[in-house]
View 1: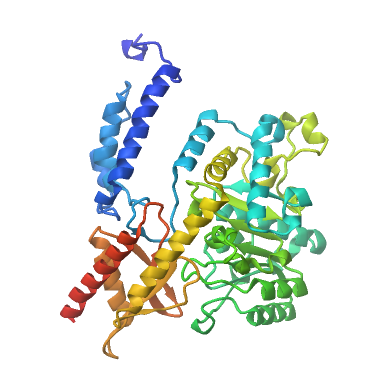
View 2 (view 1 turned 120 degrees about the horizontal axis):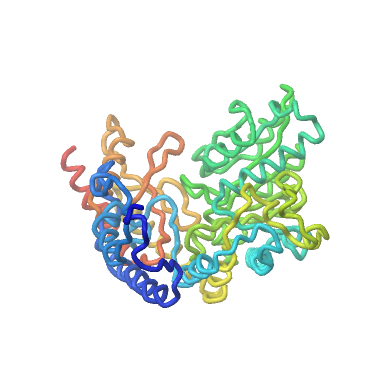
Length: 492
């Protein structure tokens, strides 16, 4: 027998003493990373394929010490990261992190339960229902969306999952009435600012590409979805033998932070009998604050609503909340009953089996992370966190307005500021100039922002929300933008 196949020592992959010692070293590594994250280039500066050249071609045959692995993490992995937790990260939308969420994630990973049905871990199922009702009440959702009101919620990893599951439920309800052959007639509606996950979800559930209607928006109404345009599109589709199925409204679009008029869109949805979904992935968290709750007015007309705590609720990735008025519609579309999972608790129909609310069978204990965040910080501090970011965004907006070379492109609703450098000559391509300005800022490594194109205009997006961001970082960003603009204009 080959001696290399024999274990050198007794293999104990979950020795508790070793677990404590090594976990402490990893926690210390992460703490040091947070203390020094500001020193790294925010956007990674590496070239494609860099890591392949630094890695062995074969997996290690024998175990390696933790110290060696952490050293490699420091020297090889960190340079290849774009540092989402940097206080100078202003790109996309933030991925919040917090001590409480980190501790909750440790509990989730450490307990490592797979709560696909109630009996597989009763506490996992029941805690999920509890925290979703907690957040629903923070948002002042109507009672029919809560478990205490015959509705309910579920935790997913992403908005895309919420889109797929609600679309599938809407599709199956429609085809039950119309017949399966009518799937080619079903139409999904959104604005041209709606997140691309909806289009992906529509593809996955069998909607024909031509039956996905991304209705054009304009600067005249701050790129929000006009109810009259939706009604006209649905009326026209009906006249051509198509069947309106699903309408998605957004609170805080990705490109510009636009808010769709939920009340009016809800009336259109009711008139045409379509499923209305509210995507509040980004800005839903802000609506726990009374001053932002107005953006949810009309939610009582929706069939479902989703928001991502991993964006603005101090909850580390991943975590998406979905609430539905009629959970039975999800269950009818997504449930399975293999013999191996049959049990008396499920068959009494007195318990929730979350496997029937989602695509996958397995699921993580995400609820304990949210539970930890809410209990450790309380509603008062979660509101303070949102308000602090909004105040920083307001400050950045003031700085922009104080420099006549720049303009704020769309009204700011939350903590996303959309701006651009004005062009001084008519023949100049303003989009090209702003593209070069953004690249100059990002390639410096001192900050990272991203762009959008709305109404044909190239916009620089400053999304404020990283947990460690302070006013000095916002002011430093503005100085950097001005510095790069000065250099750019000198070259013109």
